[in-house]
Image (cartoon, rainbow, N blue to C red):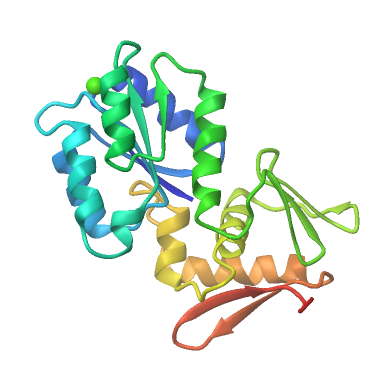
Length: 226
Ligand code: CA
């Protein structure tokens, strides 16, 4: 899952970015709303962590504009970061379409849990531990089991599986997958996705879950019909 952190305080964004990365998110950061705009023009994000007090355009103004855009981009979940005395900001932010907020200083574990919860809302698995086919997926622990037997995945394989399951109702393009699992610093080649998907298929081979290739479009993950 890809997260954009918009925060001008470097100390804070260092902590947030490394925390989210260690939890398995692909994370990019910018220091202003203007740079956030550029990021959104070029890439797809699954969540935006947005500081309200930014130099230049405030986080609130940016959020207002974001929600007015046409298309999918306008619906990306937003978790705002506000000051302890920022009650008005929180109310304004929620009214403008923020999905959740954290008051500084906050516990990193809580930010991670809330980030996961917000992304889940957009997808098919709605709790921390979910089921797809006979697979049991624990997103917080990053544990995958089939018939009580663990399946070991690398972080990349895990990210791909999680993304495909979250979007199980649609065909996910290679480009979307690439964007979902890698940040700007990762430099993954487009054919890397094929390699990861192929390894993932190998590891799911003995289960009832299949990753189908939809020719010319992308991938769709499937569980047996109920
Ligand atoms: Ca700030």
